[in-house]
Length: 175
Ligand SMILES: Nc1ncnc2c1ncn2[C@@H]1O[C@H](COP(=O)(O)OP(=O)(O)OP(=O)(O)O)[C@@H](O)[C@H]1O
Ligand SMILES: O=C(O)C1=C[C@@H](O)[C@@H](O)[C@H](O)C1
Ligand SMILES: [Mg+2]
Image (cartoon, rainbow, N blue to C red; front, side):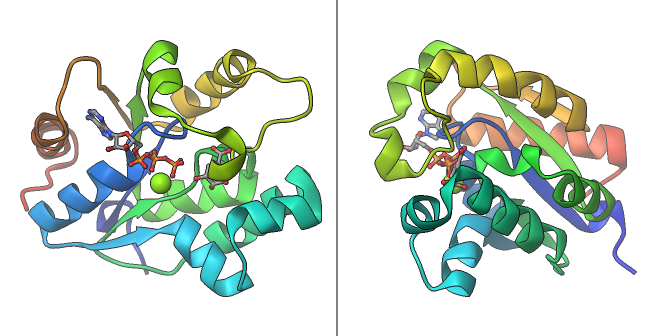
């Protein structure tokens, strides 16, 4: 059976660096890298923004919840989409099979890094601003996190170094 220490999941706002940091971390640990956005696109045979356009936000969240709760991986860094935290079963499963790391980034930095929200396929209800979305999501990210890394002023390499140090201290991971 998969143990919590067999995988690492990165959660956080879109553009917080889950994919960027995830690849670097996987390389350093000798793990596989699983970008769940890509898994969803492959399994559904469509781009994320096409799934959202066809099924709406709620339809996309159902697909995301199902695919994440069915993930069966080992020795992997998992990077789900930023909206995964709305999926209860998905998060219960990810908490069971992985150490969950919240990549915390200020609202200002998220705004600066994000390009076109629609092209990126961010799940944003009508009338909701990015600031609303940030405020809605942060409590979820905080409540699911086993570890939180404040990315302010840190380069990708430093974030990976910090993460490895905390994982060793808190979970005895020595890879
Ligand atoms: N530590 C960092 N410092 C500066 N820029 C960064 C850092 N980490 C990532 N970036 C940049 O931020 C952008 C978004 O990163 P990335 O695509 O990895 O985010 P994500 O969390 O996977 O987003 P999504 O939820 O949309 O998949 C990229 O242009 C990336 O180069
Ligand atoms: O944060 C979000 O709302 C999303 C981020 C993307 O990575 C995708 O998972 C999806 O388009 C939704
Ligand atoms: Mg990503």
